Image (cartoon, rainbow, N blue to C red):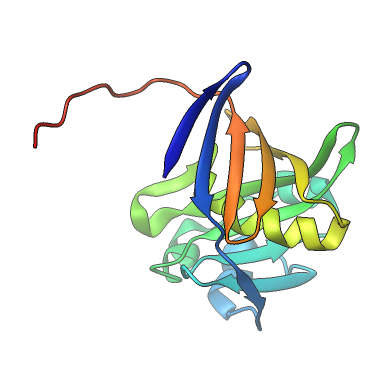
Length: 162
């Protein structure tokens, strides 16, 4: 992973994480409380639940015990955005990893970006993760790599001695 400081924040260069359509498992539907329009499973084990409306993603009140049953995967919920300058919205739940809802998830956007890029016909997209804290990410699909740009909060500083 390469991190670069940019004028407006930071840029991460990460591997693209592809996903394939799948039949939604019962734990996914029970966990979200609603059946998504489309379901995909990423190569890292995460499920992606695609909804038609961003309001449906915002309204989710997940059953974390049922979502935890999808271990080791988490659940990415996403929909097209209906606001200017944002292409899609998302939320990410990974209770089996101790993260009921992650505020802003870089790895999830490595699955979201190629999906929305193919659907919208553009490589560069603006995303908003609509968790309680939330955040905005600019995603650019570059083949096997995905570049994510956005703001960051310093939470740890240290030195590694080799």
